[in-house]
Image (cartoon, rainbow, N blue to C red; front, side, top):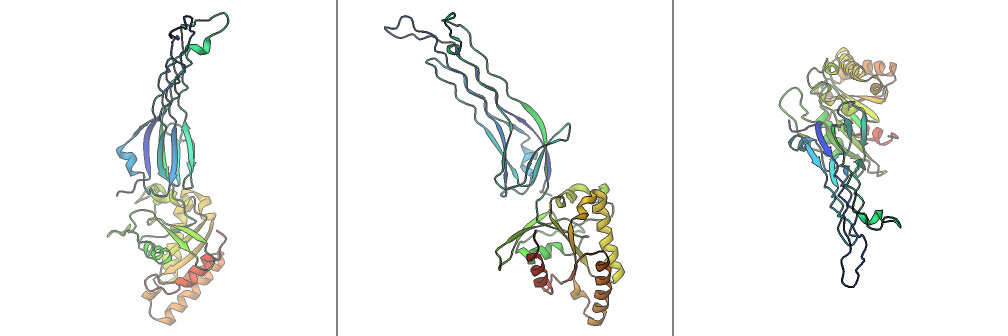
Length: 334
């Protein structure tokens, strides 16, 4: 699996350059004074969020990031060159945490958002800075200050206006492709979604756009790490709304499938399932008997009405009910 949503890296800002000890030595100026320049400042470590990056995979291969050191000062009051900043691009939705305390240092949610995580060391003062009326020829300068280093953990939590959750094989990848036009990769094993897939749904009437994130299948025990477990549950934390996709079956099977996922999400973080959410019953094309299907629909509508959850019946395979679902999502103030 090439998708990586967790990585540990070491970062370090640059050291400040040393100030210069220098005196003017020019023809016809026999008493030239001190002219040692200051050292350059060390480079900063900057994190920047980018929608062009989808994974933290690269950080597994390059775990160290060091900014440039400041240059030393020179005579004639020339300041040393500042060290080069290092800009570390991460996927939008990445939290930067201290490895020891697990404290969140930075949370980069929007494309282009920047944060300076470590400042470079300040350059030392040259001897010209220390010239006074009582000390006309200072023969000393400051060394530059050291930069800072720390080990941090990067954690990617996908940002989506709508998080699509459900048991494996509920049809989440197919639905997100129909709603957004994306083409998620599907694998030939029970956890059919390889990675959390992002897609953008555009309402043609209003021009509004919504980002949908398709979360890999959740199974019983996922909140305890079983199956894909905790690996992807954190990707629903930031969604404003949950779309709970459920494969058609008899009324009791649908209830059980809904409650199984609700239990795992609530066990992982109870407040997530308190978000606004809707239930979407998928694959209704598998029940061609209209009378039987209507009977199931009536029972399920009654169940979800009792818990105040809107419910829709669709077939992502043949687009039945998909337009009605789009209209509902378009009207939400997400």
